[in-house]
Length: 91
Image (cartoon, rainbow, N blue to C red; front, side, top):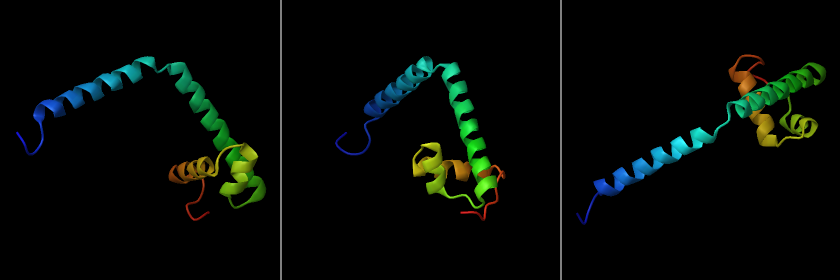
């Protein structure tokens, strides 16, 4: 089979990926997920508080006040917009 896809190799890669996925899910602690969700909710509430106090959301200000990256602040703003919590026309 000099050309094309080697089905044996492709199947082996698939089996390895499934095994890795099972490994990762087996070490995931549900309590850790709950803590992360609580932390994310706290951050969202802080963002909403900042918006109420200062008006238009600003990713730089949010990042500085919350001690997160600008990218993290942008993620929070996008999430709140998608959920309809804040207006989509804000930047």
